[in-house]
Length: 407
Ligand code: LLP
Image (cartoon, rainbow, N blue to C red; front, side, top):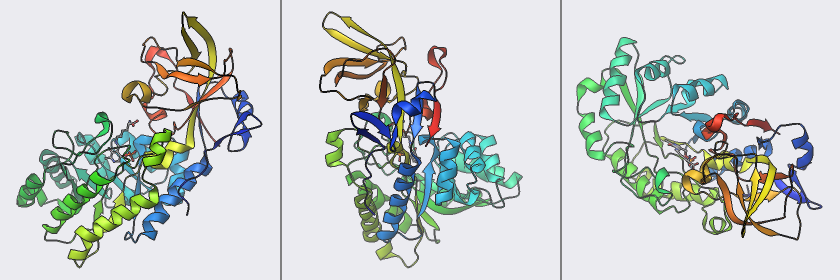
């Protein structure tokens, strides 16, 4: 299966279309700003991810989609139909995944701050509770054991290892170093394994890592799988799974396009590393769990907005749109690049800053961009907004949360 699908956004006769439908037609039916998603693109990325895992010999892959990337119920239902499980970080995400029909035996629970109520809820899901609590501290393990005792259950747990690697990505979303709050050091895991009281109502069923998001370079991923394998080799009872986390990036820019690891390459790297550092040294064959978010949903979504007005201050030109940083915070928070496309293509371009209505200078989707000169009511589309767009939206400035449309 090819790993690249043409974007759902295409110009036809200089007019923007989305999955073959004229954008202005879609926008007539919905108030801007709104998120627009392509089911076709979602299907493509899920199938590509799963089939490449199989192609590279990953044993019994379980894809636990990271709900935080996009929690739209229709998207979750579609992923469930395609065979996906879920990686959740709150009881809210857990309830949403269950509502979409994802069964507890395909749900892993990550996060450093699982509360007593959240643990209890997850433990009481289905017959055996969720597939795994990915434990991030000794204190959390003690609490899970205590709650499981009260509930007369056995909790399935995995340790999230902090593999002490530096994933090359924005510093806000790098998570695999010991200065980060995530996971446990190998020495602490080894110590916890020998404390009998932690294991009266818990079963260690797996180990996990997640070293960061929007990863384009695979070096840290290999180093982390080596650490995960080394830890697994020291554990003297059979594990059911190793969870290699999420993190595979998408191309937001042309530069990223040239250096990005494809899904095919990523699966090859993961498979080779597991073979070299783990499977070649053991008889048993734990399955592999993945927690992809962005790679599955990033490219299927765009944010559609309209121009409110334009403004010139001396030699600065502003295209002011009705979408703001409250709708899509990535540019303001991570200085992330998103392409911005006009609905009507023109050969005559001006240089402009695309800004929103929010009262902050950070409310800017792009500086010094080349765009046709636009007028009030014209449509502008912000590309690659399917991941961490709507889920990170807020009501800042008392604005409505943008609606979502799935094609
Ligand atoms: N697993 C865990 C434990 C995670 O914390 C995350 C993301 C994922 C999986 C999924 O990672 P992905 O495959 O999507 O890279 N808001 C930021 C991204 C934050 C990622 C947080 N954790 C952004 O807009 O770039």
